[in-house]
Image 1 (cartoon, one colour):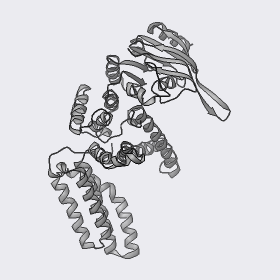
Image 2 (spheres, chains in turn cyan, red):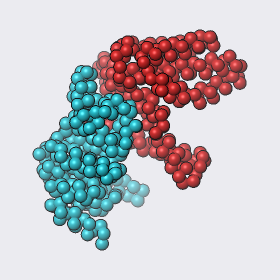
Image 3 (tube, one colour):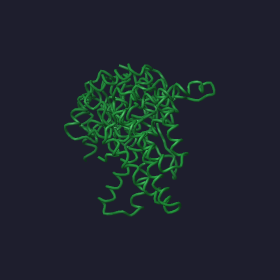
Image 4 (tube, helix red, strand yellow):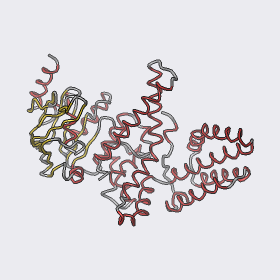
Length: 231
Length: 203
């Protein structure tokens, strides 16, 4: 598995009253297959996730993916680290499903016909073959999230960072997307409020008030999170 | 879901129009559009509309798609035509209305018979020589495709914002709609930017 390293990485944002710490300087090395990140809304877990793909650059410290500095060589890191957002609608930028997946493949396949073939194969892999030529706006919430994931996974990143991918989904789709994510060969960093999904990871980080307060085995970390969140 | 959200959707096929090179189709559309705008004759307008419909027939564009395109431009066309009618008389109003309808249908024929990625490939090819002066053809092509997709995406936000205003009992007050709509459009633009960056498409 790839090695994700946070070396004293922290994020502050300027506010009217002075700088606000969104994530305190954090040092972590993540090598497990599936890493869960749980925490309350606004705790800093999405910021931590975004650091790994270079969507947010650290104000202090460094973030490394297999030794490559995210801030210095962002493009190289993004080829290795895919990112999936909570709201799939923001990620789907092409009119039809197959065209959206093709967009992800543009860097990897120059030939239009072969790119189309690969995109259709990706859609079939994620159960969306019948919707290949449908408008992305005509899909259900679960299908949109699957398509967004298919778009990210089409380029075969070594790591997938998923920021609350099931928050907007119903029970059946949560199960479907969760099973898909946890069954991936890629390393997965899963930010989630779904504690059942977090328990199925290999390691869980609990983030609170901009700091990682628990880092350990899933059952123990989730238990401590529940106790701290529901006093 | 509004049927307008389906505008710009490619319909796969093997008709002559599907097989024509993107460059030919785009040049033809540009020439057609210029002619429609420059030729000032109500009689010719009906001819232009007939030409757009013939192209749609040739490309086997679904009637439903054409009806959607017509409906989407109808209100604007009626308002503009009414203004023209008020200023210059009925023949000018009819000409303006038919011209706008013809242009919308011709544009739909292009998007229905051409995959967006094929348009992207063509733009990247055409702008290739500009790399020497520092231009990034992939980025320009992506901007173009985002513009194509912006209409249905923005429309979806408008419908959601309208429903949210209704749900809160705010009715049709413009401020209850416009302020949150503009904020949501800007927020969505930021999210889309993040998503494109995350997919490495801006690199």
